Picture 1 (spheres, rainbow, N blue to C red):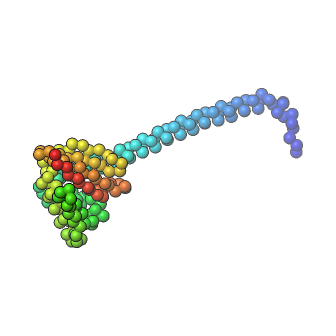
Picture 2: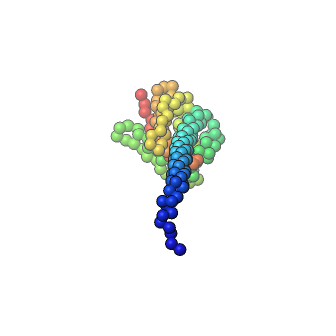
Picture 3: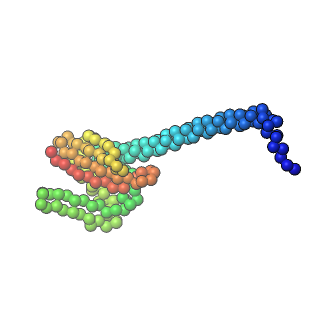
Length: 183
């Protein structure tokens, strides 16, 4: 069977109608598809911003909680804070402190056994409580992937707390570095 070439010329109005209907349908589908694509892009942008905001909020809450717990004079609360907010590697890592006595001499301590790690961390909390137990948060801001919290006590002593967190939720504290600045 051969195709009658004159079919198109005979049925031209019908073909035009079909072509116009298909063109209209394609335009509608394209518009509909573009609308859906736009909504999906907006949704993903919102979800991404929300997730980033949640991550930042969680980190800031942990930093504020650290400040609150430093203000307490209760070793059990300090232990509870550490177990709930420190990562496993932070809990197992020995305490490393570098205390500068003068411009020329400094003392570094890193001789903690695994059994004494928690006890050493409690001693750090005790020192922080002594210095910043009655302090206020002067600044709390994100700096790249960490939180920088500046505390100031009633005598004007300032402490810059650089708090690093795990990359994945629940964003536990992975490292705390404290630099104390006297007036």
